[in-house]
Image 1 (tube, each protein chain N blue to C red):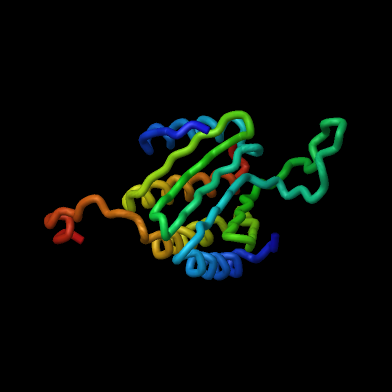
Image 2 (cartoon, rainbow over the protein chains, first blue to last red):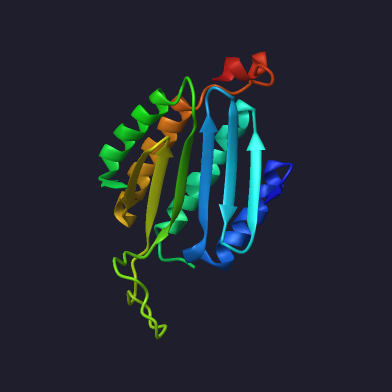
Length: 78
Length: 107
């Protein structure tokens, strides 16, 4: 359960984690409107990375990363 | 867990977001899915040969859980719709600073 302090680092580390074991890696985001919190988590059951933010601008970056990941998951690249 | 079509999933997800506005949270999970509907065989042979990978998405808020499978051919369409949904639904966070006037003028 490691929180990564900045998004760029998280993105890089998350990508590495995913590419090592694409089929067993899951990626989840949690949003709480009342608390104004947005948490991101990626894990392959061995290692787990988290990132949390309260800033609206970060959502755009996270969203971009998510669409890339979605595209990669639904493709036959390894 | 209810498996929905992509469009139904997006519609339900919008509702979940509305419901969780006052209290509670929403979790969305995605992972790669090879299409298998049976457990992995014990001898280690793959359950699905030459899988065509898809993406499995799940969303959960309170006790309601929904899921969908995005096929390769639907990825573009789905990811656009999904991004739009997130953009409109996730809007309760802090805004750090306003964009510069110059940037506004060029838009």
